[in-house]
Image (cartoon, rainbow, N blue to C red; front, side, top):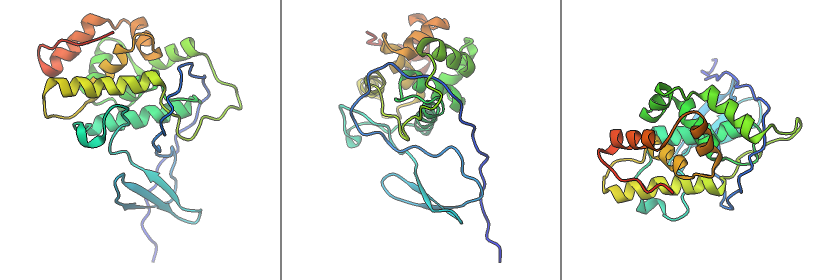
Length: 229
């Protein structure tokens, strides 16, 4: 009897540039592969859920993120990340690989938000004319393109600026006293807080500013005071 299979269309890998932000020395989290075609998909559970792909080819394990890396806090001491925030981070890390970056920078965090596309942060950016394709183009203009035969690490490590952006998101959530989740809006504002980062410079080039950042924050939490650098 034939067994049921789940097939995923392959995602093309394009060429791009190096990221010039300084890498953070923490261990990167695994990232889902970009193409699973004609394989059986079995799901097993652990602290980070693992997808086991089995077929005629050797089996492949893919880890599904359940949290995002933070430098200052343990996962037991911080609120949960929203599903959209986790998905955005994973898509951003994947985009870094597709663009052949050596690291996952703030630019990749920004692209991940826009690729995920369904969050209030993504909708706000698009409403203000900031789209994925514009961000991607500005990223290439800012950082340049990679060598033709350069291969990105399987799991590009976070740059120090990207790590600080995520830590900023956690800190602002803890300061708010709200018991809700850390969202893509927190990641967006964390990226904006890193004024010398590629992500912040790209946002600035595309018309994002402190007034728009405050508008985003107010729509999320009411009247808040943000500690941007």
